[in-house]
Length: 288
Ligand code: NAD
Image (cartoon, rainbow, N blue to C red; front, side, top):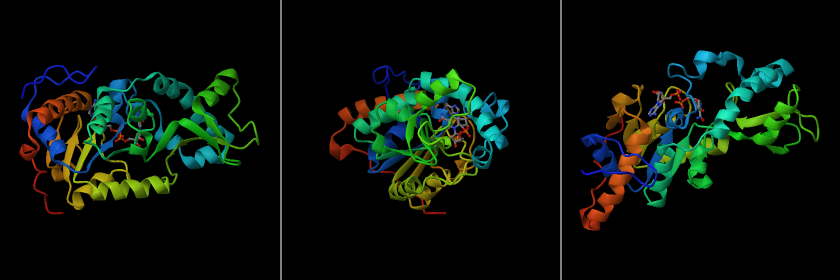
């Protein structure tokens, strides 16, 4: 497999090994490929993940950022917004990584049904993946809402309030609690997104996990649902995950380089092949 530069602006992985070619074949052969992404697709955009060394949980105590603390007291909200003062500008300044760009390109090539993401950074959409193809299980940090009257404010607006004063943000219309539309620890997942993600995972014939430790539930059930329903499961992650043993393909490498190479191979491979020569999806593994 000869790979040069990737899709505009993408660096293809080098050297290319057999696993990348196999992942490209899986995308080529699948009728309903679904991507499941985690914080690892955004580390290459400069947004730290939670669990890698030097990640956010090395610097902040996760037990302080619960839904109960946020709702329960001004002090709890102040802690949250103090963290947001530091983290939001990083999200705002980040540019989509090669992995985000590759997934948007896969969709344009008709090779991606949807992307189920745990990420809250809006980078899949900013890379060009249509919003209705991104199922956000943990919400989106770029939007906020008043819990009393439902008024919506962009995070940019709320960030400007934070920069202008030390006050904990409150709704200018009714004084209610303004909360980012992200899911905090201990908060219920958005029901519609969860349902849709489960449906798409179960209907998938290929599920490709990119940059997730697969330890956060119920999100991590999505690849499990896909696998149990008969999909081929591929995992691209820098570190081992609890689902590696169930996966048909594990690539321990950077998501951006891998996906750039895969997209390039799909573009050149599709051009090379007659439709009748296209690989069939891999034989399904029986559900464990
Ligand atoms: P995680 O931090 O638990 O795991 C990230 C995984 O990605 C790690 O196993 C790491 O080895 C791997 N990784 C890091 N860089 C990589 C790269 N370049 N290529 C491939 N793999 C790479 O993240 P998670 O599984 O998404 O779960 C944590 C929770 O954190 C989620 O609920 C998510 O909402 C939230 N989160 C989101 C963001 C974001 O939106 N960018 C950032 C931090 C945390």
